[in-house]
Image 1 (tube, rainbow, N blue to C red):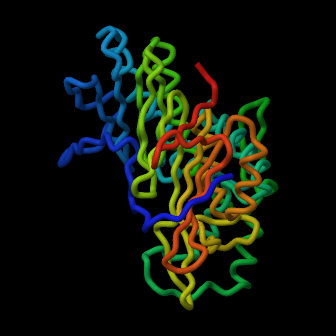
Image 2: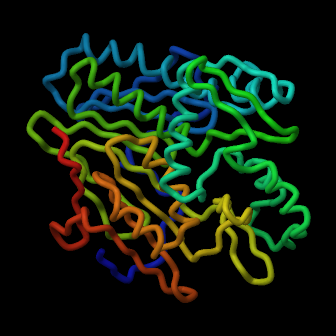
Image 3: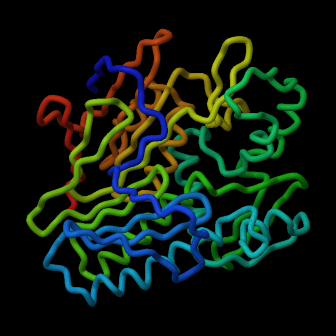
Length: 355
């Protein structure tokens, strides 16, 4: 584990810094994309309801046919996963589950079934700090950067009864689920971005594409060029970048937030306590072969804190992380796991050993 002192963190950082804005246009419907190709790469943007998804191919040897197939398949695949896991879209299956009668089974499609399995995995890895049933607690707080009183402990304890693996049932054999208590609300947003990036990368692999980068929200995935050359990613720390060949990264930060009696609370929750985190963790970057697990762990590491979080990461094969924290006001430090190596001043490299 390595540590360093750094300056103020950059808020709202864009991974890969490759998002050409496409302003003044409606968000996408399935199958719609906008070309953003340049002499350097072939690429397109899909405007999902919450953020742009950018898909770029840098290898010049890739055929137009393979690229056009990706351009056709990626938007509809991304839109389908987004809608399936959307808790607000009345056609989304998470919405249907959350609004079904208590103890009434809802048959669910493969993306949501997969999401349940992923959620169980991350919950187990993080000792319960990550949980997709956290929504009833989240609604007790206002994350607007202002000063607010904390909700009464009695109300928090009441909502905590709606949190955890026992408040819903998932039947993998018959691909169905149900809520076991009134008021339970499932929320798969902490995994949705990672699952979408994974599917886009999988499409690229199936088509034989190389030199690919996919960015969406706080997530990014990449496939190395045929020459073996990877990509340089910025981080939340000015002057620090990461070289990644093939793999995925998820970044999470403690914004939005609110303060109470001078303490800063992040929008990220610790499901074990029922409270927003105040561990001093400012930002997290997690690297993994699959973006969904990087996505889930990036959410949970802030709740675990630096010591417990790094201990967890060091015990996981093929997964690494960088955590930025504020031990004292105004002093930010960064710490990275042992799988990340320093290759030049301000440049670190990560490779999971996947061709």
